[in-house]
Amino acid sequence: MAKVLTSKEENYAQWYNDLVIKADLAENSAVRGCMVIKPYGYAIWEKVQSVLDGMFKATGHSNAYFPLFIPKSFFSREANHVEGFAKECAVVTHYRLKNSPDGKGIIVDEDAKLEEELIVRPTSETIIWNTYKNWIQSYRDLPILLNQWANVVRWEMRTRLFLRTAEFLWQEGHTAHATKEEAIEETIRMINVYSDFAEKWMALPVEKGTKSPSERFAGAIESYAIEALMQDGKALQAGTSHFLGQNFAKAFDVMFASKEGKLDYVWATSWGVSTRLMGALIMAHSDDNGLVLPPKLAPLQVVIVPIYKKPYELEKISEKAAIIKGELEEKGVSVKYDDRDTHKPGWKFADYELKGVPVRLALGPRDLEKNTVELARRDTLEKETYPAGRIAEVVTKLLDEIQENIYRKALKFKEENTFHADTYEEFREIINNRGGFVMAHWDGTAETEERIKNDTKATIRCIPVNAKKENGKCIVSGKPSSRRVIFARAY
RNA sequence: CGGGGUGUGGCGCAGCCCGGUUAGCGCGCGUCGUUCGGGACGACGAGGCCGCAGGUUCAAAUCCUGCCACCCCGACCA
Image (cartoon, rainbow, N blue to C red):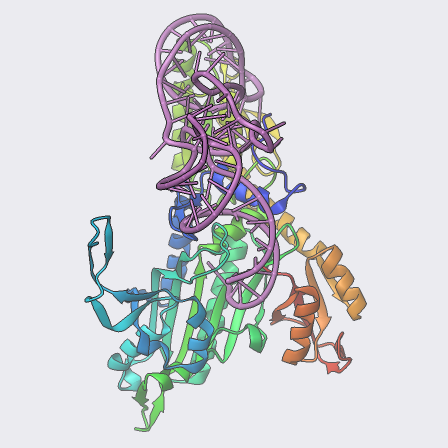
């Protein structure tokens, strides 16, 4: 078979780039750092969106939409927040163009300078809290549980399709609560929604935990994250949920009157996942033949490819294919019958493998004769022949099995690449030679974290929520520590 | 912003050192035919301001100068 992808072994980063392009997911655009998400890639994102959106609704949230532009002054209200984002903001300074005097093209009209510059949102806390101020007077107005699906811009120096782009798509939830407890509960509820989604839909096992202070969201009191392990041993933050305390309420003066008639600042959370999830999905399961998609998120779950020489064969095959397609669709399976005569079966086989379609059925003259169907599963690349009458039943079961199988595979990988280190030498050895998650004791100081980062490029991915208490000594300082945290090199 | 590299049909490249016919190869594309159970084959064909602007020269894809764009590696980040 002609090789279209660089192998993972040979060059993992190149394999990823090739895969995104060749599987027709996305491509670089004329605008530096910004990508074009192509129809097939966008179809996957739409599935992700629709499932998550359902989960948000089920937990009581509604969607709304806030502006793309944020007045610069809003940004400077919350000190940590500005500091966190200032270096990567796109700024709108003018609102008009004019013909250039030399007649060559078009220039910015200096007379059309904005009174106050607008920031293209890197995240929307400020504009939203400025709005919430007008919506909240009393405890009766709380909680506010909103989400928005939007694009945001962070002016990144180095970008990679899906993993880090200057503009990306995401959802950001922003909630307002009367009590601290309720806000914390919400923060945890949403990180659980994310980890459920990752595990049950993306077949992606994750580590759930809190961020160290230095990795925390700018403006948050506590940040929760789910961290996934990619096949090259690097960690990828797949979702975050933040307890913002009263920081934004104070910055935007959002107070409410309690039942007792006392005024207090409102408690806040925010949480988000982005098109970066696409990167996680791609890297978690795929192989040298292309994408491997979990059936639950695959835009197309089954493809039927006819194999024929004569037109009358195609006719008969098409009849049969239509029956099978109907049976599958009745069971809620998405199916495409690819009878294009512009491509040969072998080409189609390779192409659907590249695109990660979970199940492929082939129907040829031999199958007509024996009333059978050849079935190939993408995750294991195994082929088997089944009686045509049973195929719908076999496929529906198989889709579940594939979903489970790729999860188990990813879980096994994560477990086999999670190590314990008790000395710094050991730690460095693992980080440098094997990668993966490294569980180690940490004294809780930013200095130690910084030193480890400088020495090894590994950072604290999270402090696992369900880590068992275990007394030990910090691998760097030797100071006492009560539990291990997860270190890794990260995307 | 530092360090390195690359710009040549849609894509991937060769040619450049050492200037000289009509700029070449693979993939892809079009037409026709044979094929079709793992990326088919043959014949014919279409497609190029050789990144941009200057310069040197009888002559520039090739040499010189300037500019622009993109990629890779570092510091920042989801």
